[in-house]
Image (tube, rainbow, N blue to C red; front, side):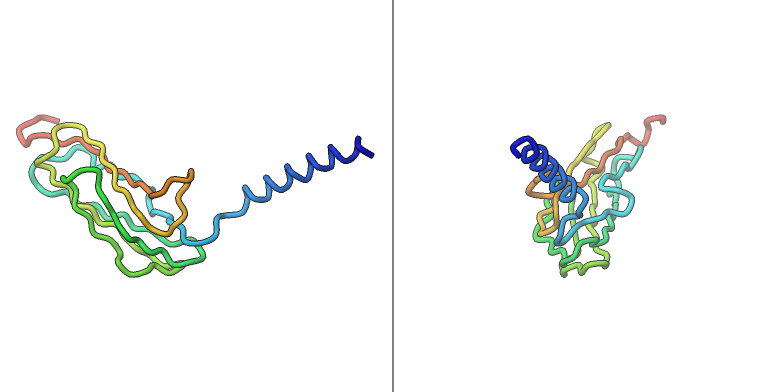
Length: 139
């Protein structure tokens, strides 16, 4: 009987792990259109550069964004202040002060919300990057 019990328990445990890995998380969940990173490419230093990250709530509860914090003072943010219901769209709008950029840049923007975050992180991170050049620089 013991010879059958141990393999049965192992099979049961592996089945439980497999079933939980296939189920999507419940609650609020971001799905960013075009992904959670944006490349400005090569841009001229001086003018403010803008990008709007649009997302859909693919979860089962409203997304409530409580705070959006850029990794530096060179980026201003705006976001959907009202709850984003399941199936609805929201946004994170970024404006980057390019005069403060010199060459290649990589920035992060941290989103605090009630949405599911992969890998157990406490906040969701989106990314911007690019290469800021002087107007007289040849490409």
